[in-house]
Length: 159
Image (tube, rainbow, N blue to C red; front, side, top):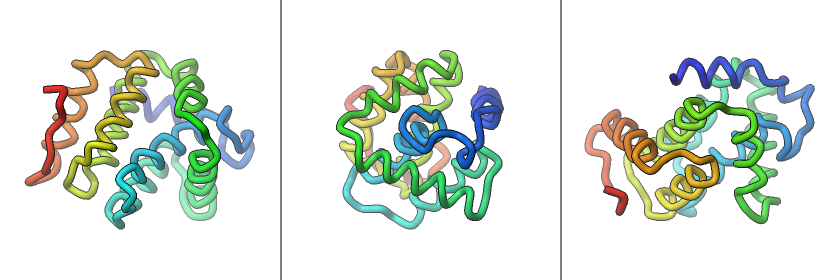
């Protein structure tokens, strides 16, 4: 399933050629990942590195192109008034399995620093709801991401 979402994301227009706004699925994905990374008000180096690694892996990009997509996501997130602009784009573009996989990517960003903050948990919950990802799928994706991190702290009220 993860490979399917990566394959789909790679097939989207390249960030440099596509519109550099929330209607661009790559910018929408980058903005949501940036938003969850920044939710607790502290951007850890481990989170930033995982954020950029997810973008690089998802879109097969590096260097200036990667930096441009990360910056476009940050800019779009800072200018957004809600998450719907981003989730609606991805909901239209991704099938249900790919949406579940995207929620898994969000959890990877959350757990990059080994901790779960309640604001991060809430954002993933809201994004999952807006993208019609079922509760049990969101919780399972969280468990999988947490299991990859030795000593991951924090639990969700979902359980």
